[in-house]
Amino acid sequence: MAQYGRAQYWDDRYTRDPEPFDWYQRWDGLKDIITDVISPESNILNIGAGNSRLSEELYDEGYEKITNIDISQVVTDAMQEKYKDRQPNMTYQQMDCRSMDFPNDRFDVVLDKGTLDSVLCGEGSTRNVHTTLSEVARVLTPNGVFVCISHGEPSYRLTYLHCPEFGWNVMVQTVTKPMMGLVSTMEEQSNVHYIYVCVKGETFAKYDEQKKDILE
Image (tube, rainbow, N blue to C red; front, side, top):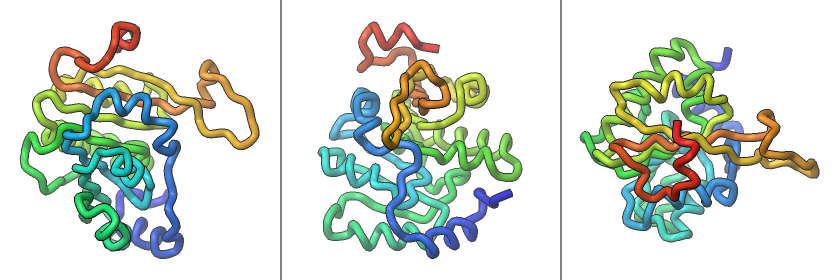
């Protein structure tokens, strides 16, 4: 089993393959959903950022208050160096999402593209996922939003996200997986990624009535 929860695993991986890599989706596949829950003023945390281009693309569209964390020192050093002149308001820090060095109520939005799935593939997965989500809930503001992009179906992921102590309202949406030369439909579960929008508080202020109909 790959040691996804260990920093050394990721340090080795990013040393071998430093080229940018995006799990699941690029920004274009996510923006219609994510832009409903963020604004240019939002203070954003991207957990398990790796060397994804997601934060770069967000920044280029006017969302400049972005903090990126990853368990790998190798990749955070490389990414901080890469963007220090191009996007100076965006920072990278080596940090374990299971134990974040941020105060309570620090971020308006927390983004996760594949990190929760990675934690679930490692040892002690149930405990580590709960610890990660507890930390996410802690650093979110009282009306903050956690956006989790996952390959996991709702029957599996909602078991973790609906934990009462987090106090989240969870809405599930799907986006078609990027396909090379193939046609896919949203009805084919194997051809979609799931986006879990987890909101603290009582309402989805920026969602219209049609989207509210699929509130879990």
